[in-house]
Amino acid sequence: MEYKYQEVTIRTDLQSGDIGYIIYLHGSMYKQEYGYSLSFEAYVAQGLYEFYQQYDPNKDYVWVCEHNGLIIGSLFLMHRPNNAAQLRYFILLPPYRGIGLGKKLMELFMNCLKERGYQSAYLLTTHEQVLAALLYKRFGFQLTEENRSTAFGKPLKIQKYELILPIT
Image 1 (cartoon, helix red, strand yellow):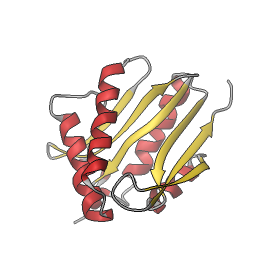
Image 2: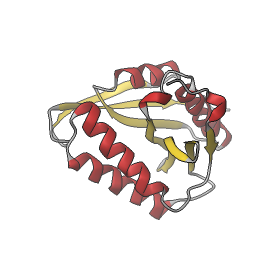
Image 3: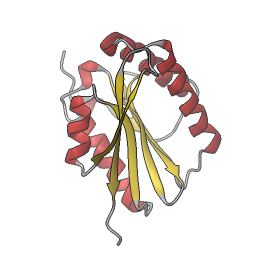
């Protein structure tokens, strides 16, 4: 079933239940699609707890995508030292991929980076996220590091993509 982007609402505030549901989406989807273990869900839970603990509305940002009242995706901008930002928790349920929603979220992320004066951004992903990597590259991110890992219950290459923003 196809969904038009116009039918999806993107909100920029966290509400009760969002953190738990986004953890659930990551855990269940990555298990189903890639065979990741429960350790991946715990990793996401730790990171979202860190986001919540250090949340600063002047530095951090969230985009929560909803359709018919259900969360169908998200993207987080998390501040880091040295005027850097980390792109985290970028997820879209399968029926909402390929309709331009991921591109829209990346555009919102990039605009927010510039508006808030960040000098750089980075993200961590795995070699299995081929389509996501293409999107990141389209927005100027470059693969800068790759390390072997079994942290999520299977052999993977953890990848780091970085973006240096022009000084304005």
